[in-house]
Image 1 (cartoon, one colour):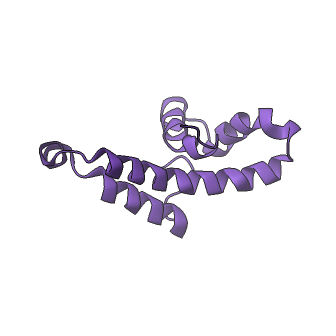
Image 2 (image 1 turned 60 degrees about the vertical axis):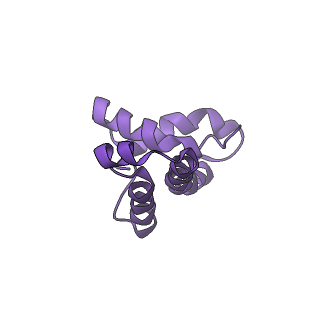
Length: 100
């Protein structure tokens, strides 16, 4: 199954921010740089923000499709509502780039 390259940025961006301490915008722009032959950076940044939002929703849908057992959910929490909460936070602006 294929996905848009900007939808998959949610977790790698968070991990990169945590590990490097670099500003998330700098890491995002470094990721987007190879795509600048296809579109201007400002357009890519806007598209990436949409992909970042969708990425949280895709993660919720993926966990829902996996139908995690109640034993796993009891031990680790239910990831579906957690990702939907992250989706809402990104949409509302309370969760920013690199925090999801």
